[in-house]
Amino acid sequence: MPTFKVFRFNPDKDALPYFQEYKIPESKKMTVLEGLYYILENLDPTLAFRSSCRMGVCGSCAMHINGQYGLACETQIATLGDTITIRPLSHLKVIRDMVVDLDPFFAQYEAIKPYLVPKETPGPREFAQTPKERARIDFLVDCILCASCYGSCPVVGTDQRYFGPHALLKALRFVEDSRDGDTYNRLAFVATDNGVFRCHTIFNCQQVCPKDLDPTGAIGKLKMKSILAKLTGKLKKTG
Ligand code: SF4
Ligand code: F3S
Ligand code: FES
Image 1 (cartoon, rainbow, N blue to C red):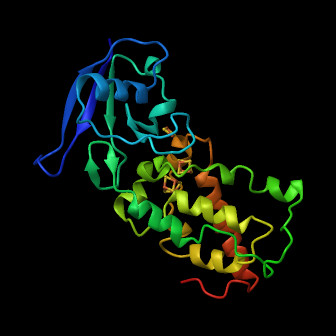
Image 2: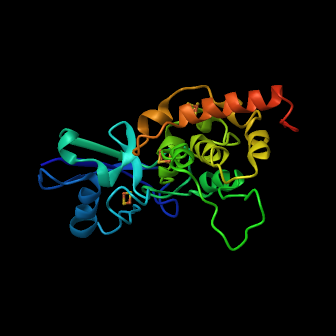
């Protein structure tokens, strides 16, 4: 019977956070999210956490589980030992228990303009891509904005002005898109002290990504592209 040691904090009534333990029945195929639902439905209806799809698609159940960031719905209890310690994502204000305020995370995402800026005025035709052009953004479009990388990055933890691995990975997604016409403005925006040059290549973001994406590599690519653009005179402003 595994023990869930769960972070609890309700800012409206608790002076400090604390851990609460719950025993849940053994189930070989149970995920951490199912364990949390067992607690909610059978032991403690006050427990707060987020989830939606329960299948690794929506990104809402990311948390810190036995020392690692990841999705509760994709983490099997059987892989974790007898005690499972669960905390909310780091670097974000706790609203209650595992529910954190994601506003700063999404503000940084919005800042990189996460939408296509077409090269031409949109008309009645599609902006087609060849399979080769699409392949350049294949892995980059898979980000589910779960914030595991954000929680794991020590640079985000020390200065939230840093754009963060999620936003920079998405910036590369649009820089690499053959249909986008804003490449050099995008590179100028990220080639700043709070952008790509703030990353210390710590690799935590790459290690924790539940979609096996490589934000570290994406940031490295943005660094190279922005330096090249600067050297060739294509980058007008570097902040
Ligand atoms: Fe989550 Fe990975 Fe996207 Fe970061 S890059 S938000 S860890 S899916
Ligand atoms: Fe942070 Fe990832 Fe860079 S962990 S410092 S964004 S390589
Ligand atoms: Fe959607 Fe876990 S509930 S990713």
